[in-house]
Image (cartoon, rainbow, N blue to C red; front, top):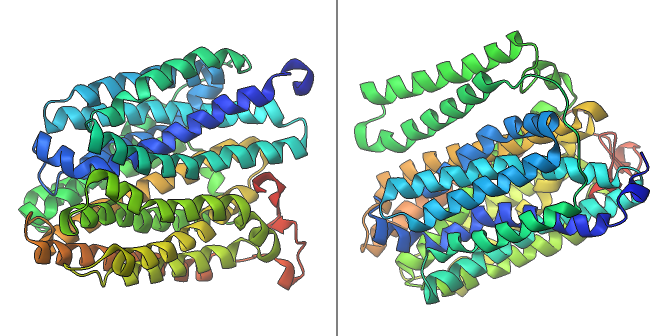
Length: 482
């Protein structure tokens, strides 16, 4: 099919897809600045506050593979539009919540919407631009740039809405934008579905297993790691995740055919991505709390304080990382990025109760952002590089799921650590700082372990220094990410 002839408005369609990517990523960052105010208004305990973030991440990460499968079976444009309807519904519930657990339900529904939108958007992008590698490269660059742009906008808008309107506006904003995106979806190509089965049982098992694991880790500091409840919950989570793999091996059309793991470097890249998320997202979460609960920043000032970090991310990821990837290959950038992230987190672990933004936060956060900028795109490319074309979508879904799962489990574990070290004592700056220091130090250890495991596990890297082509990253053409 001549995509260029069939879709003359493909660049306008790309704007719709990039807007979707922008909003899905913004949904994970806009929440951070508003957390202290939501905690106060809705009665979250310090340990349970993370569920405002984790409910979205678990639903999003746990259902991404199912979203991709539904996109194949029902048609990508149809699933894309359905995802926006679900996201709008979740936004209404989250904005109207009067207690903590209704808020969590709203966030989970938003995550379900995101899990439908993201894989359908990628499928539509490939349909629109696969006819021309140069156009595909430009389209991927613009689509990729929407992610850090969404993160940056989320931090800023979260501060604006929380400071001068109310935290409810961080959800209300999705309603008009979602309706506008639904109206613009007519620019997207109509894609016919195909016959096939939906592995609902597998999707339920993996999502329930992840949710139970996170719940157990969150509650363990309160009830005890050796308590009967914690042991049973962790055992149940392991059983559900084992059941997921058994289902994938036995059903005719699984969500995740296990043969995909024979793709070179997919396993090591996913391990790196999980640890990257487990270090980066907790840093973002606790840095927001430190700025507001210890340094006394308002919501807008806290959001503005994080703009230099998100600005560096956006500029570096869109303009520099792809060039470094073409020159050095994925492995040194992934390992180096994780080590740089660990250095920034280690620096943040020295924050003081009487600290200042310029001394305690700004330089360390920029170092951490540099590490994330170096590692994220190369990790994604390494995961996709060895997959045959017919499995590229599956490989993309797996690595995105891994990042979300790592984020949720890392945040749960480090929240437990921070709470045990004093982060639950609101109003006590010294105790709060002790808890946040412990979280930053734990995140630094996770990132450092990720860097070391990347060096040990990611074999066969081919870069210019080893005689590989400057255009090759483990055999992948980096023009797609340029």
